[in-house]
Structures are given as C-alpha cells and as structure tokens.
Image 1 (cartoon, rainbow, N blue to C red):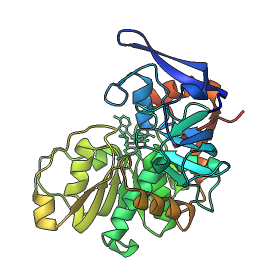
Image 2 (image 1 turned 135 degrees about the vertical axis):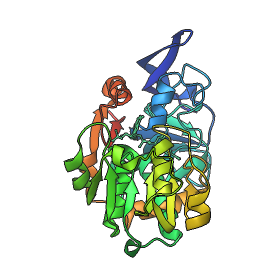
Image 3 (image 1 turned 120 degrees about the vertical axis):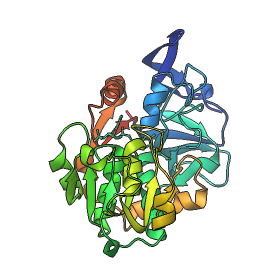
Length: 333
Ligand SMILES: NC(=O)c1ccc[n+]([C@@H]2O[C@H](COP(=O)([O-])OP(=O)(O)OC[C@H]3O[C@@H](n4cnc5c(N)ncnc54)[C@H](OP(=O)(O)O)[C@@H]3O)[C@@H](O)[C@H]2O)c1
C-alpha cells in the first residue's frame, strides 16, 4: 500500500465540548481500511457536515475526524473488481464523513459497495453541485412521480428552497413541467427562487397554520419538505386528495404536530426519504436521472466553489444561515 501525503480538514475536541477545525497534513496510510482509494476532486457542504464539524455526537462519535459526506474523484487503488484505477466515482452517504474519514480530505478510502460510477452526462464537479442534496431531491421527486403525481395534478410546495435539497428540488420539478411554489425563508430570495424555476413564492407565515384546525383548504398536489415541524404539518393538512408529500429533512424541527385526518379523509401519502442507506440499485437509478432527463440548467446559479483553505469560514457562514444553494469544495490542487 503506497503512502501518499495529502491535506484534510480535521475537527478536534480541543477541550471537553470545544471543537476546533484545521487543515492538517495526513497520509493515505492513516485512512481506514477499504477496497478503494479515491483521489477526491470535489466535495460539497451538506447540513450533516455542519453537525459533524461542530462536534455533534449523533453524527460523529469520535474525534479527531474529517467530515464530508460527499466526494467525487478518481480511483487510485482498488482491491475490488468493481473499480479500476482511473475510474471516476461518486461516493455519498453510508458512513462517509460520519465515522469514516470524509470528503473534506484530498483522499478517501471506502468499501467498493459505496461507490457509484460517475454517470455519463455529469462531470465530477457537476456531480458535487448535486451531491447528497441533489440525490435526496431526486429521491423525493421519484417518490412523487412514482406515486402517480403528474404536472396536471397541480402545484407542488417546496420548503427550505433557499437551501441545497429544496433549491435542487425546485429546479428539477420545474424542469419536468411542475408548477412549483417555493417557501422563501428568512431573507428575501424571491428573484433567486424564480430563477431556479419557482412560479410562486410563499412567505413562511403563509405556509404555517396555527389555528389548530385538523384540515385546511386543499392547495397542494404534493410537496418536497426538508424543514419539518409546523410547516410540514400545515402542508399535510393543505394537501389535496391523494396528494404525495416527501419528508426528507428537519432543518427547523424533528417534530410533526399532526393528527390522522389528512391520511384517512384525503388519502394523503407521506413518504419518508433516507438517502444514507438507500439501496445501490435505487441510488444508481437516481443518479442516472440527475445526469439525464432531470439535469438542470440552473446548476451554476446555485453554486459557490471554494478551496480547502476557505472551508472553515464557509462552515461558519452556513452555521449562521448566511448561504444559499450549494457550496462545493475543490480538493485537487
Ligand atoms: N433524508 C435524507 O437523506 C437527507 C439528505 C440530505 C439532507 N437532509 C436534511 O434536509 C435538510 C436540508 O438539508 P440541506 O443540505 O438542504 O440544508 P441547507 O442547504 O442548510 O438548507 C436548509 C434550508 O432550510 C431552511 N430552514 C428553515 N428553517 C430553518 C432553521 N430553523 N434552520 C436552518 N434552516 C432552516 C433554510 O431556508 P430558508 O431560510 O429559506 O427557510 C435553509 O436554506 C436538513 O434537515 C438535512 O438534514 C436529509
């Protein structure tokens, strides 16, 4: 096994409960065992990375640690017939960046079963504009359309739309012909959301009902929700008969204050989305759609590209909710 020097962001517990982040030199021989050594070209910052980067033990049990649940790069060594040196590969989720050194380092070593060959139609850089966020948006939209929703059914509500999952969901839905209403959160981003493809912008106060009524006027054919809490509960109460709601996040809350009426009186379907342990066949199907008929034209409008040296400040900015869209991290020198 060759030992290649590289750089990585490492999060350390400097004192009990106090975490620091630094770019440090490492060697590939420090990486965990695995079939495939990948030279990472790009990673991206997802919500879960913010948790890992700030010492959240629910995501990362042991520190020092390199976060980064997303990585796209080139195979350098492979002990598996599935991949050959030179192959371009996408690795997202499973344990990457959680308790396995992640994509915020210039190399990762992972089981071959975690890799998706880069589909034709995407570059490594483009694949990370989508990353786990786009993959999750695609799984959510697959849940909507494969449960019968067509553009003729009506408008789809997307929450967290200024973020990664929500923004990519807006653009993909618009691309495939849906009318999309986007919830615009804390800062006015109406123009940006229209650029992504939203046909209507909804104020969060409008999308949240605290009247306590069990059902509300049926407005939405379906929804992609990455926010949870009251917003998701209101969406479910406002979804039309036989509508489909994909629940994929908890950016605001993990609670769901709801009764059963939307389900038993309107046949509303609430579908859970889990990208982390998504089976490989489904994973490849979602990436094929992202690279194919669901590839969006607005990707560059959503992305900020940074280098490894800028990662710490980008994490701080995201923690302060000072970002929008997607931030990708260039790892190759
Ligand atoms: N199920 C899965 O497999 C999966 C995969 C990826 C992500 N997720 C989850 O999906 C959610 C969004 O992830 P992301 O990567 O899109 O994150 P992100 O880029 O940070 O976007 C989150 C968006 O949610 C909105 N939001 C509303 N209330 C918020 C609050 N109290 N705190 C922070 N944001 C709030 C914000 O938009 P406004 O300010 O405009 O409201 C923000 O832009 C997270 O909960 C994440 O854990 C789940």
